[in-house]
Structure formats: structure tokens, C-alpha cells
Length: 264
Image (cartoon, rainbow, N blue to C red; front, side):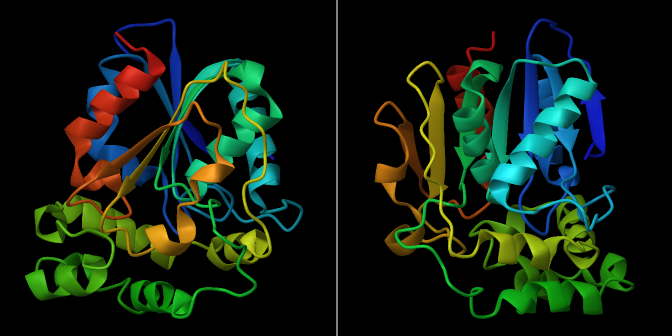
């Protein structure tokens, strides 16, 4: 399956950076760092199946390995056979799978709160998994008005970001719309059950994993098992940071991407 993607030609050519969003999200999640990154290199954003502008397909398997192969096919359709990958949440798990499946194609990996590093695989969806989706769907029509109010942004984003007050109106609106229309949300969730990342990533692939201290979605006690990534991984923990580090600390994340990817 070829996914909906957008190429942002950078001012400096020669390297390509792929951004993969998380479950219930869309490529719009990268707006807080997109301009800074596209100043440095060519950037590609994608929408996973049933997310953003990519329709849901009954033929597309939604487990992270299958999604990784769909991403490879999409990048090949652009003529990109080697590139850097940054992924958030489910996108981070997909990025790890890509480095394990075809390491020669991956110049570096940065996982921002990557899923799949469970202490133990989950046998059922998180309690309350449906809450965020239900809330977003129920207010989809009036969200452009509601999100002007601080109390509405608090309800929607306090559990995602300790710095929710600093999130822009555009970021909140994009995220609400993405969740409300994510037909692939539950299929992706169910495809992760009874699985975790078990691939082997060679030392030739630079790898960084970044988690926030206040990540309530993937807390350290159950979802940040360091033994599942190789010893050469740069493991970074950020204070005052939740499940979307590119929202809470955009400049810091850009700098970490530059360092890991070796961008000038």
C-alpha cells in the first residue's frame, strides 16, 4: 500500500528525513518542528492507513512490521532508498521495525516516546482507550470554537502534555481532528496486542530514544523497557515533557535529531 505523503524540499539537499506520526494522529502533528527541519534537509511526512489523508484499507495489515513495509514502499515510490527516520509513539515502533527489517536503508532512527517497548505485551486495550477517540469524535464539529477556551484544551491535552497551556490553537485543532477521523485507530491498537518490539538493530544504525518524565500514555514503569533496544542506543529522558516531545520541546528535539542524524 502506498501511503499519502508530502515532500518538503529542504534548502540543503543530499539527505532525507522521514517523519512518522503516532496512532490516532496524522502528519500534521509535526508542524511544530517541520519548518526548522526543512531548513536543514528534505523532509517527508506520511499519513498511516486510516489516519490523516490515507484511507483505511481492509487489505492492509496494521501491525508495526506490516506498516513498516508500507512505509518502505511509499518511500521507494519517491525514489528514496536510504533516509533518516523520526517516529512518535506507534510511529517510533514502526521506525524501530524499519531499522531491524532493512538496516542498510536507514541512516538513523530517533524514537520519540516509541511504543512497543513494553515490559510485557498487552493482552487488551488500555482501559479508557476509547475515551480520547470518543471525545474527539463528539466535539469534531464544534472543536474550532471550543478550543479557544482554556478549559477545553485542558480536558483534551492535559494527559498528553504537562505544558498543554503552551500548545498552539493550531496544534490542538489538528490533533483533535486527526483523532476524530482516525478510522485506523482501533485496527492499529488491536494489531499491537500480544506484541512488542523484538527486532535486532545493528550498531551501524545510529539510534536515539527520547521519553518524557511525565509521559502518561507510555509510563516508565511498564512501557520503557531499555533491554529491547540495542546497547548503543542513546536513551534520553526529558523533564517537563509528555507523550509528544516535539510539542513540548520543539527546539531541543530538532537539536537531538540534528545530532543523531548528523545533519549540518
